[in-house]
Length: 229
Image (cartoon, rainbow, N blue to C red; front, side, top):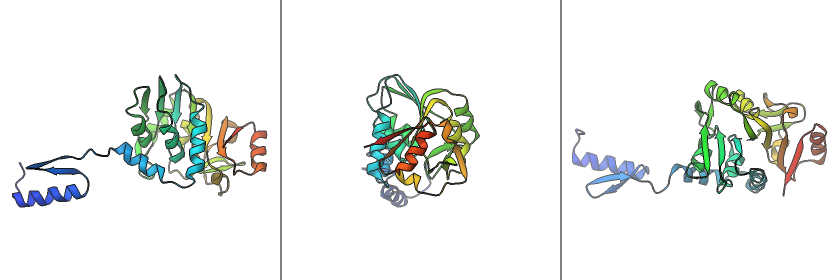
């Protein structure tokens, strides 16, 4: 029992209700479950830059996933959008470092989810650190899907991530790797942290805004460039 007066208790309950933590009832309070965390993540991830391009890229990526696949999904907005398009798949196993993606797919009976573990970056709710890195080094999946902060012909896939080693291990954990990146990622200066080199990538899925010269150079490097339209 709390040693507070009834009036103080009412004030505290009202403050918690105002913050969305509970719902007051006659004589008490209950947890407010009107909107779960997956719905919150869904709402936040739908309000993003380059949304139309990312939706097309996500749809193209989701079309490459087959029933029975064992796949790995990285973190980020485009990967989250892709995850929303996997509902209805059967006997699909998804390994991810993304807490929002895990929440999104949690209640789908046809999908089994594994989360890497590790400490969580607040910027994108992704698992990072040695635990996550070692997790991805020890698994092998059919297909890997990851994003990019920048794509550069010389430096490859680069990231602003505090811990790019986890992303590197993730990208190398499968038979083939798909990089999902809208055309804006080809127009920014490469970041210092290299995730993977271009020869390690099987496919890049992007939109039609990428320069033709860049597409030709990527194809010459042996990369399958998929333009989402």
